[in-house]
Length: 539
Ligand code: ADP
Ligand code: MG
Image (cartoon, rainbow, N blue to C red; front, side, top):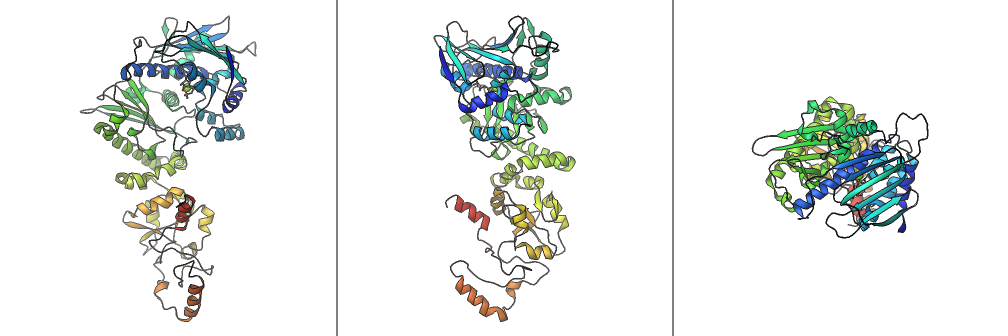
């Protein structure tokens, strides 16, 4: 037997669990069942695709309670783990960004849902246990299995388990009851039944207690929406997303005919901490006729909608379809196009009918959606339709359509200015004449704004015009640059000479009302912020 130490981050997380920052302790059982279900999916898939020789005819999950010993065991006959996998998967937290999230967690004691972003699933057992034992054997391996045990402090032990069957069993040694009059404990059969029904009913393998099967196993995406409660959808969402909070929006889709598929999509209510990290998990789950095929299928949804979670179940694909084939598959491309349209129209519905939800959505995901303006030409208009922007007109963001309605007589263009923050943009000298004359200017402060404004020429026939560029004409003034510079010629000449190294030209302008001078770019120069971005990127 060996005693090993948890990785530092894992230890910190365990501490949070032992001291139980999350009030709903029932969910430890959901997490164990969720892991068992994943393990069964993996085993079935390995027999289908990798030619693993294993018995996949009776995949199931068993729950066993022992009142005397105060233990609860969840057992599966799924893929199992090797010794090294146990050390790697249970002893460490591999996700990038862990340290940063832990820091946030410490600051925000009041928002324990944050912890869900880790997928701390297995560790949640330590909310109710003073000791946890895991016994496992990997399918398709010879020799003994592995026994892991820990009290959730700094260390765990690892040992050989000679007789372990294929699969994994997790035994939770429940803490002593702290109150004599507690209404239940986790060895009560009715309590177990209740938790399974509530959180895990849709799991596609039988969850058994004795001879009884506790769950209905109905695939949620195959059931009519009217028959499924919000709570069932929410639990399903939590299962597939590893998020602990409720989704913002649920989307059902179904296509019949030559190519049949069903889809159940979710828009989360909060951006994951790694939304803008390259290696964040993204993509949808792919099923073929109710059989799980793969997680994170990126072919089904474009990157700019990477926050969308859910399942696509296609009837006519081969069960052993590979990722390489997926990329080329015409049907998959068609499904993807339809999903994009549906997600964008759902956002539009929120914008028109549920401003509060829309505001949450755009705050969390708007920055990602705007990437689509660059990457998805076909839907550029549809994306602009659902986008909102900060504006000088009010503190509330505006759509482009609403901006156009407010345009002043004679105004032909949509004015914007990019920058780092609202106050920086508002205080820019470029703003002066526009403010003075009552022209509304959009305030674009996301880094991606710098880039998409270059790619999008106009909206509804109105050109998008940076007020930091060239000689923007204010309709109500005669263009300063056309006027004779008369008395100012000597000054301009002097400035041009002195600043020859720094600027291309020095001009008189009517743009300014209080500032004496400002820097502008030529019409086809890059904007100052973009210039800064490129410089930061070393170009
Ligand atoms: P997550 O499920 O979000 O990955 P968990 O903490 O629940 O995080 O589990 C960590 C990892 O341990 C899983 O990803 C899986 O690889 C492994 N694991 C946990 N339970 C089982 C099980 N019953 N069978 C096989 N592997 C498991
Ligand atoms: Mg899990």
